[in-house]
Every structure is written in C-alpha cells, then in structure tokens.
Length: 133
Image (cartoon, rainbow, N blue to C red; front, side, top):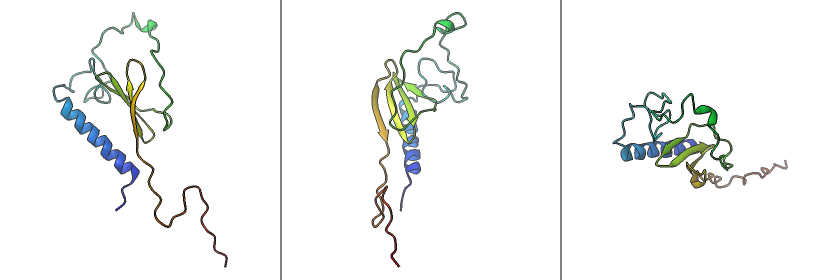
C-alpha cells in the first residue's frame, strides 16, 4: 500500500491539531483571541478578532515591521500563521516551519521526505530507456 505525500501531510496536520487540543484544553476557543492565536482565525468562528487593545485607531499609524520572514526552502507561504507560547507556525509548500515570533528566527522545520522511486523505475531526472526495434 502506497501512502501519498498529501495523505502523510494531512495525517501530520491532524496529529498536530490533536496535540494542540490536548495541550490547550484550558483555552476557550469560543472567545476572541487574546495573547495566544492558537487556531487559525483566532477562534472557532474564524473572527480574526483579538481582545488586545494596544493597536487602535490612534496607534495604528505607528505600526511597522518587527522582522521579515526567512526564505522558506519550500517556497512562499500564504497561509495564516498560528502563534502559541511565542512560537509562530507557518506552512509553505509541503513543509511546516516554527519561528520565534519575536525575532523571526527559525526554531525548526519539517518537510516530508521525497518518495523513493519504485524499484525498476528510472532515477528522477533521467530519460527512460528507448526500444531499439
């Protein structure tokens, strides 16, 4: 039985979600996000609203970037990050990255390994043998 890379990534994501649910059972995800952004959208309603009040109509003009993201090995990320305990989790391509939310430094990354070529198949990038009939 061959498991596709997407199935493996889906399983890993589900496992990570389960681990997050277990570790954060004390959080009420029905309420808007505060200091943690533990699930995509901030809460079960995907409201993208935070109860933090330091950014408002008077202070928004003073906002600036704290850091820029490192170049991801897997390409560009357009996913909504999740932040928990000072670690920002981002996906790019088929990889997951954990970044220090304050500095942008890479904490770790995981990319699924490339599948091995089936036995008897040409190596990746090589030309298949041609018949000389």
